[in-house]
Length: 174
Length: 117
Image (cartoon, rainbow over all chains, first blue to last red):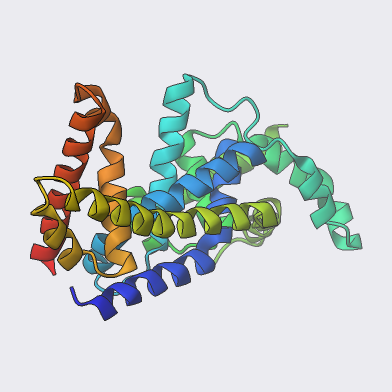
């Protein structure tokens, strides 16, 4: 590779970092359930991504790299839990964010329901919870989620449908 | 089309799982770490070059210099060499042995990158 291409590689990684820092952090936060671990996970994700960026970019053939980043975060989170031999005690531990985010009159009316949804999400199987985080927190489409989870588009569509249905059932049952 | 109740639930879900902004301290931390990687790469390679001049294994120097002339290349070499640092430390008999192993590893990684270039 020529030097200008290497400089471009660094510049491209910089763009990727700026474009997806919030995505990776949001995923990490909802995945691990606290800000401290989410910060560590986010940092490790970008360091890992930097190490493998050249190959990932070459193999992406122009496709977006967000699913690749989220897959790195997913693998690192899995390692974190394996190392600690535990699951998160509270997948979403800081409801302050939620309260401060929803202060308009419309949202005040729905705050109870939002709290029930948040509480129910932690009871979902891990794979369904992840799919919902990717769809609703990160706004990823089926194809992106499929790539991040290593599934087909069809299987992802079914997974999301079932996750939403199960969550609705859990919320209704509360 | 989605059932209205189903669509409402999805709207609520979207509100519940709002994106979370990373703290400023994290941005600073990650950016500093990435910059440090590049800076460390330059420092370590300079140190390796000085060491190689007084070392009989100084054949390594031109290989490194040729292959890692720019920061992205140097960072890549150092990242790869650092990854294996623990293994080399465990395998080495003394600091000199460790230095030799590190230089050989760097030369190997540099050659790999040069071949790919």
